[in-house]
Length: 95
View 1 (tube, rainbow, N blue to C red):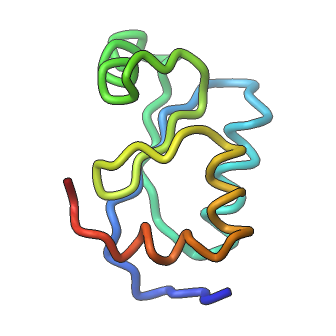
View 2 (view 1 turned 60 degrees about the vertical axis):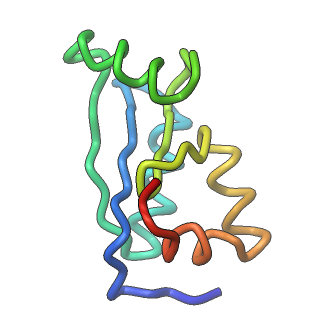
């Protein structure tokens, strides 16, 4: 696993309060030293519409995007990392 700290990927996490999956997803990104922008859909409900539109109707949180490409939720993020495919996503160009 490559812990690339010079990553320029745009990582966005739509999250909410008291969400254990959100906490786990953000912890993985922080462990990998990957900066991300967090949008809390519970504190600002207008963000939920954008999240659902970008994720093709995804209602659950977190919803994670890397370089404007939809990763999915926490489980999908961990699966990418486990398979060694997260670095490839981080180096992709924005859609």
